[in-house]
Length: 228
Image (cartoon, rainbow, N blue to C red; front, top):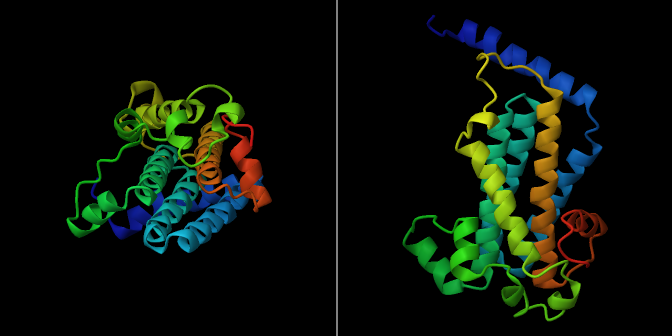
């Protein structure tokens, strides 16, 4: 079969529109829409604190919105791809806030984007206890366990990467190409969305000691990594 505009509309666009309506009607989107609001709040806060790094957060917000839309449209694996991208960019941006020479080299030389989450933790001790202690001296008495934030980050990044790289049990189209609504897959996505944004909020709060936004503060506690 050769695709035409008519076939594309009937086999892709129309089914996706139906899935979107089903996703909206069968799930409580209040919490999900709150995640968009929190993401925009983070963009604004980071931009005030560091306008250069704030530019990256526009891309992070775009990834979160793209991720939510993909999940709403039944494109569950694609939604995870965007989530992992958002996590990677959020971590690298927070790294660059404290490593401005590396950031300027990254921008001016259009350097390879190789600050993966696992690389940041393994090679730069990113958000380990000793890393956090350089800007938040109370971390040792508030953390759930030693290196709780960096361990959470690596574990979450590994889960997302399993899906992105196609670990067999994470594939969603082994039984056919049709795009369908699947509530179980949507709920799994929601869990990952909560985990990604909760740890991003936690890192923001730890780095800047800013608990002024109640929604951001409450979401950060979902990670259960630090008693803030």
